[in-house]
Amino acid sequence: MISCPRLTLVERIAAQVLRDHEITQLPVCPIEIAERNDITVEGMSSGQAGCSGMLVRNGDNFGILYSTDVKNVGFQRFSVAHELGHYFLPEHTENVLRNGQHISKAGFSSSDAYEREADLFGAALLMPKSLFRIACERVPEGLEGVLQLAQQCQTSITASAINYAKMTDAPVAVILSVYGKVKCCFQSDNMKRAHVGWCQKGDVVPGCSVTASILCGNTPYLGEPIYGETDLQDWFGCDRPQPAREEATRLHWPGEVLTLLFAAGLPDDDRYLDEEDDEEDLVESWTRRFKR
Ligand SMILES: [Zn+2]
Image 1: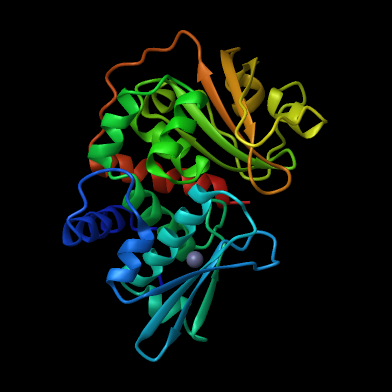
Image 2: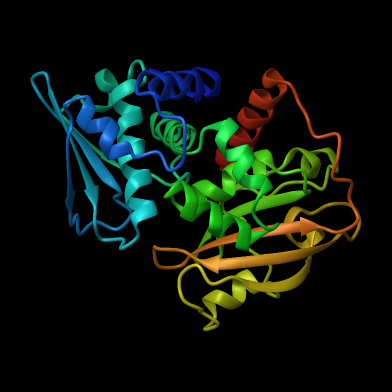
């Protein structure tokens, strides 16, 4: 059993899968990878809120079912990539397929280590670092750029936003919330360096934020960004006021909102951390997020 996601291992295996299949450009098609490994892929209506897909096993045969309840190709492809994570990553089939099938909740909001590893694998498979970095440099800053990246990579908006935070020079935080409560938070390297604090799973989003306004009737269509001004002190509890730009959009599931916070007046250079530090940061952020 694993208790904490193995980021370096997950990224290494995703890169190996891409090399084995000689994939060198975006978008990466997870269905093609599955079929080349004799894994049958089919869409289904799960009828279960939050269910993104399933991995099933019958003897040596594997199949992937992805939820068609969310009518978004990017979300569906990310769901297939998540299931491929359970197939390719060590210790997954033994632990998540004990009954011959595994029901997934892809989308970075599960606290289960296997689910989080499968999410990380999906992101690394569909958004390989070298290709994603180039794509990042060619899109506008902010949520508009994230939406373009999701389009280019044919993956979910949430996964694109989290990867964007990992790559960008900008001091930015990405927050996923459901019905006004934080599910998870990611910060770019330059936001972490500014020591503005953090929000934890279960924290309530500020009532005066555009994120909160989306839930109070200001509900543009899926993926439409809305903009506002905010203060990081209201989100992260930092010692002094820190003005920021807020960009938010409604997501697929009811009550789900993605928020990007750009701190004003913070440096956006000196971004590089080594891999070890990066992994420690990620593990630390998980610990914070799921300690409640
Ligand atoms: Zn899963």
